[in-house]
Length: 250
Ligand SMILES: [Zn+2]
Image (cartoon, helix red, strand yellow):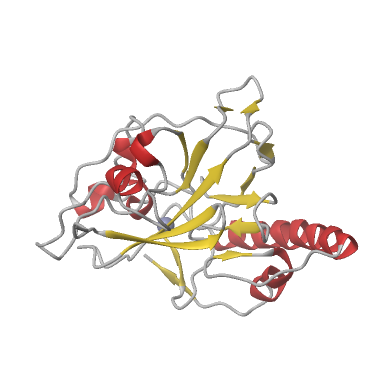
């Protein structure tokens, strides 16, 4: 029997899944992405990715649900025990994890403690909300760092916060770009006290150039695909980058 969960998952492509955390007490409804990487990856840095790794992009709000009937509040338990397409995303926890936080705001890190440990109470806005800060240990890498031989590249797209990342994955079908809180679908883009709209425009310019180059490469190789919510395939990303946006301060 299926146990009620704070999470639900949807396949975006054979190895990419969107995990939605719904009805959370913060009304954030965060999106979490899971990429099942089958490649073996070791670049000698902090990021050594063994064969068979679940790459998580953000970890949501920690399963704090408005629904008292929810039984599965751990993202890790959901990933390891709940059937998605006939089996859990990581059956029995047999695969390792690599967690990429697009930035440290609470709605991206509250579920991370199942995976890592360290401390960032202020800039996560956990102090602002008077909630306990998860403890985890991040690794810092330079802009453009590729994780082992996974082909997944980390881009420093500051603006919403100084630490914001975007994640480019050319290995999925279609290739995808994950932008964290750099863009929202239906809300004004938020700038907390650490944010900068000037930096945001720098990042959008950088991404526009990056995506233009990748789009040309894809068109040259004849591989163009459809787009999905909050993660976009390359050809669809340029219209989004060029769209007028609303802005607000936190
Ligand atoms: Zn944020």
